[in-house]
Length: 494
Image (tube, rainbow, N blue to C red):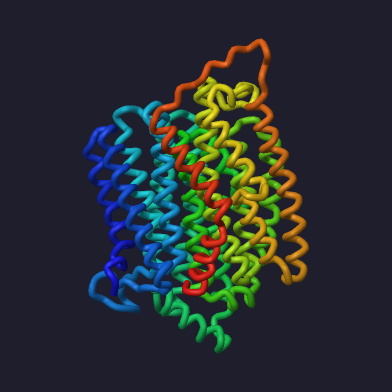
C-alpha cells in the first residue's frame, strides 16, 4: 500500500487534534494554528489527488486490527481525493478572506472556540467523504451538525440564535431519519461496512426478500440527506442562517456543509445500494420532483429578496435543485454532472458570500440593497468577485457554471419524460438566475453623480483570500474538462 494511503486518516486526525489544540489558545494564535492546519490538509489531499490522477484506483484503509465486516474502514479513489482537496481549499480561502469579520463579529473570548468548531467541522466533512462505514458516517453527521450550528451562532445576536435553533431542529430530524435508515439496513444485511452491505443488498434484492423495508430504508436515506442539505421543501432554515451568521460561516455552510451530505448520499446510492436497485425501486422519483421545484421556487424567492446574503442563500436552494436533479436522473452522466456542480458551487458560493461581506463592510455593514447603491466603487475587488460569481451562477459561457449546466443537459438526453422536464427547468431557472443577479449588480454599480465614493480599505487577508477564489473560479471556467475526467474516473471506481 502506498504511503499516500495514510493521508485521508492524517487529515481527519490532524483536524480533530486541531480542535483540541485551538481550545487552549487565544484568538490570534488559534487563527494562525488553524491556517497551518488547513494548509497542511490541502497539501495532503492535493498530493493524494495527484497520486490518484496518475494511478486511478480505489484504496481501502483498515482502521485498527479488525477487518471487514467488523472493523472500520476508509475507502477512497479519485473522486474522494478531488472533493477533499476542494473542501480544504475552500475552507482555507473562506477563513483567510473572512478573518477580519470573524474578529469583529465574534466576542474576543470566544474566537478560539470558533476555530475549534471549524476544525471539527472540516474533520467531519473529511470523514463523510472518506468513510466506508455507515455508522461512522452517522457519528460524523452529528459532529457536523453540532459544529455547523456553533459557527452559525458564533455572532451571538438574537437573530443568529433563532436561526441556529431552526437549523438545529431541522438538522436533528434529518439525523434521526438517517440513523433509523442505518438501523433498518443493518437489520436486513447484518453489516455496516459499505461493500459488505452492497453485496448483502444485492443478494436480498435478487431473492425478492425484504422489498418493503429496503424501499423504506432507501427513502429515509434520501429524505434525511435532502433535509440536511436544504433541498426544497426543507430549505426554510437556510436563508435565516446565512443572513444572520458572520460571512465566513455563511461561506462554509453554503459551500461545504450542504455538499458533505450530498457526497454521502451519492456514495450510498452507488456503493451501498447500487444505482440500478435504487432506480428499480423508484426511490429517486421524489427527489426529482423536489429538485425541479427547488430550481424554480428557490430562484423566485431570491428575486423577491432585498437582503444580499439571504438572496445568495435562496440561490443556493436553486443550486441544490441542480445537483439533486443530476442524482435523480439515475445514470452515470447525471452523477458526474451532480459532482461537477458540487465543485462549481463549492468554489463559487463562498466567493459570492465573501464578496457580499466586502460590499457590506464598505457600506457600514448594511446588507439591504437600498443601502448598497454604489458599493462597487467603494470596494472594486469585492464587486469584481461578485461579477465573476454571478456570471458563473447564471451560466454564461467561459464560466464554470456554464459547464455544469452543459453536463446536466447532456445527462438528461435520452431520459424520456425527465429530459423535457429537466431542460425546461434549466431554461426557466437560468432566466430567473439572471434576473436576481443582474438586479444585484445593477444596484452595486449604480452611481450618483453628486456623491463622492470613498474607497474602502480591505485587509491583506481579505485580498489574499478573495484572489484565491477569483483565480480558482476563472481557471475552473476555462479548464473544466480535466476536472470532469477525474470525476468520471472517480464515479467508475466508487
